[in-house]
Image 1: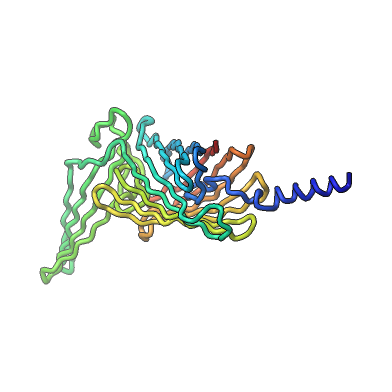
Image 2 (image 1 turned 90 degrees about the horizontal axis):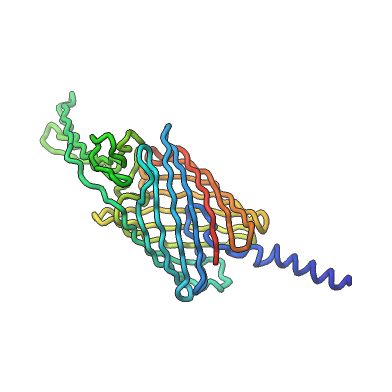
Length: 324
């Protein structure tokens, strides 16, 4: 009897402190893409909810996602995006099919794992130029002249949006491109362009899309390189190198990086950051919590904050992951 008790204790210890305890349950981060893929003919269903707050304005979003293993180390996936921006009804935003592949064998004991994904975002509506263009000219005391040209574009949201910012019933985001030309006294000039400053058509907040990896209003290709490493039995880190190429030719480079610590077999927490490599681009940081009520189910939630003016002030995320 004593020998049986010792055997059971050893088995329990192996279960909760060995490889099973630190097993990769899949989609273990809030905003990162990790190395995990379902095995062939298995799948992962992810339901995500997001709330962002900028000033006194709230926006909401839903993003269900399905990833299904079709070959060893390879999977196909699709995600849908729905949003409820300030002043507009809930509406379909985009669909994004994708291909996922594990470059390094998942059964390898090497502590570093590498994979990638290639996805394409089909937006419900792409931005269309607003015919109103304002031009402002001013002269500096030094004799230099500054010509500021503001080009406005509208990205409508929801069914029935007219896309006209002067229409009180039009929802969506108004984006601007600011082109400044400084003409010096000797006749030479220098032009700079500021992209992505925008506001909700009903009076909302700013976004940055041009040259950014944080884009939701454009048809665009998303490529992500995933590098995942194991630090200890209970700690792992993940880094994503992200490239976004919009149909209009604008390219953006960004990153996502995070660390996750497993406190118990059922509870873990993460610290994650994501953003653009551009100094004035989108940047945010998040704290996430994950609970496993069942081996095939993960409940996750987290809070975050923007670090740059084009990011929201506060972010709340929640979701569920079901492996089948």
